[in-house]
Amino acid sequence: MIKPSIAVDNPGIRAAQKRMALPTVILPFVGTLVAGMLAIVNGIGFVEVTLLAWMYVLTSIGVEVGLHRGFSHRTFEMKAGTKLVLAILGSMAAQGSVLYWAAGHRRHHSHSDTGGDPHSPHVRNLSNSDEKLALLRGLWHSHVGWMMTDKVTNCTLFAKDILRDPILQKVHVLYLPIVVAGLVIPAVVGGVITGTWMGALNGFLWGGLVRMFLVHHSTWSNASVSHVYGARPFATGDLSANNWWCAIPTFGGSWQNNHHMFPGSAYLGLEWWQLDIGGIVIRLFAAAGLIWNVNGVTKRRVGGRFDADFD
Image (cartoon, rainbow, N blue to C red; front, side, top):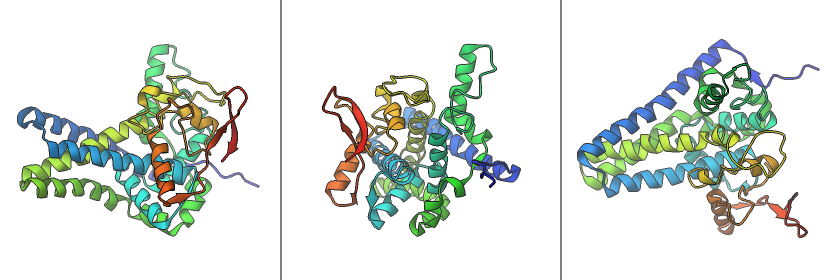
């Protein structure tokens, strides 16, 4: 029996991926520069800061709670409405559709920090004799470069459940319109609140492109920074690490060593001091009855160590 390939080595598909990746990386960066220059000239007001904050929170929940812990790892069950909202919010982050995001992330876990990992900072610079340059090249590849150079993940191998889910499949198909909506909504809100076209432009920039830029780089740091720097309390077989200083912007996603040890857990912060905003949101959703059957990791009574039993 022929084992299916983990990636699709098709020049046309890879070219399409690159065409999608380039504006995804460049446009938020350019928008952030423009927003910064306008802020220097005109200042920045309450409306812009509020739109940035709310859109950051909502799309980060969509990514970390929805795309990551909900759809990629299936750490809880959810109502259809909850699934739809989380999938839409995650898609608004413009990091790939729910199908490609989940398939790529599952591939990462299956081949973490090996040649099959789409965004490891360690496996593509081994022949470089300059250690510091090799590290920088690895960080660049895992943070951004892989989107332009890596083969496309085989979604039929890694994400059949999402292909078969009518809600997630529909959101996948509507990915680009949803990304555009994530830019238009803050623009409309900014324009309506201020009653000016400049307010609409600022809403588009701060609630749209600047927010997108910040969510991108906080999420991408989980693949780059959190596989190089930090503590490794668990022997996971890879180089995933816990980063306390990335905990807030990633909504808890930076507890990578914990996560790679217990990928089936909905909660990534295992110690009381490990802030896990995504885990807090999940507890709130569970209390409201929006999700159920939430997987978690229990602590052994002897020695305070964790085991793999879920509660």
